[in-house]
Every structure is written in structure tokens, then in C-alpha cells.
Length: 151
Image (tube, rainbow, N blue to C red):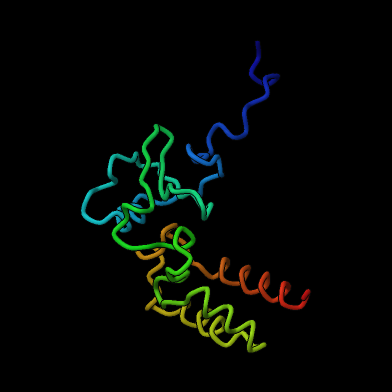
């Protein structure tokens, strides 16, 4: 049969966490190595994923059954540990974002936005996903502000 008439599985090339089923975030191999310390990849293939579901014990996984649990990482990471900094580069935490919401001004969030554009931002090596945390910080701030206004 001609392949043009066969529906391809859209999720076939996307990684889902083997424990919770959440869609994983593709992570560059350099970011996985940076998070895992000296053990290169701990048995993960080059195509690693981060499980973003906070209550799942899996931090990283691959499509071949390789798994790294959050508890085995050299340091706590957000969202697996809510007390860990959301921004490992500059130490911004959930408490900081909540304080901005309480105070009615995103002073700390704005400072993070400015800092994230500087040469001191090292997202590729410090972030669990290898990406900037700015989008996540902005989403959290807006969600918390909406929750506060809805009270």
C-alpha cells in the first residue's frame, strides 16, 4: 500500500515518560551530562528527555527504557523539588515569585528577565532542560497573580 494513505503515528517520535506518561521535553545531550555530573549520560541514549510532571520520580529518560530518577541527581531540580530554584543561574525560587505577587509588582521577575539576557546566564549547563526558565517563570507569575485576584 502506498505510504501516502497510511496515517503516521504523530507521537512515534516524541518521548513519553515511562512512569507517568507525560510528554517529555527534549533535552540536549550537553544539558543531560551537565545535570548528571561525571557519569556520562548514566546509560541514556543521546536523545534524552526531561519529565516535567512535578510528582513523577523520573527526571530524565530516553526512548530505549533508560531512566534517571530525580533523587539520584547531584542537586535538587525544579519542579521535582519545589524548594529548588526555578532559575538555577540566578537562584530565583517559587517563594520569590510568590513574594512578587503578594507585593503587587514583579520586581524579582523583571530582574530575572534582565539577568537572563546577560552573559552570566548559563541555561545550557545549569537548567535541567538546557533551556531558559523565563517562560516558566512568567507562566507561574501570571497563574499565581490570577489565583490571588480570584480569591
